[in-house]
Length: 175
Image (cartoon, rainbow, N blue to C red; front, top):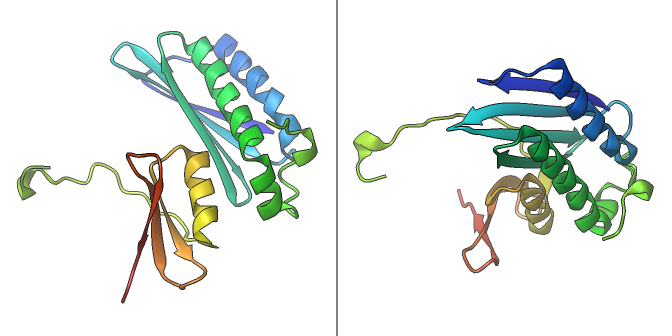
């Protein structure tokens, strides 16, 4: 597992880099050796934010933490990623049983007006054909409240989202 560390507005000492690589190396038993972990460190109003993303050939694991102590934040992010692996192990095995990037045997069980409408960030991504329940799984792994996907049942674009009552919704498109 290779760890790529990016920092924004924060100085990363060699000691901090070594700690991050050491902590994330504990997750390497879950993935094949060619997997890359992207770790981003940034400062937000006196607090440090750490974000980590692992793209395991089609399945994305993501966790973030904001803390006054960057070392504690690293521990929390590693724990969150490990928990994701455990929490969704059986579903991931069903979906990715042939994916050699994930080593499952080591995973433990367990706006007021138009003038204010400004696009602050633009992101492009590939739409992957999947069923709605797989999209919900991917949304939960990314820790987002929505996920856009290509619905393999309807061949249309779908959006799953988390509702305020902790249930899920599905938006389907028509042309």
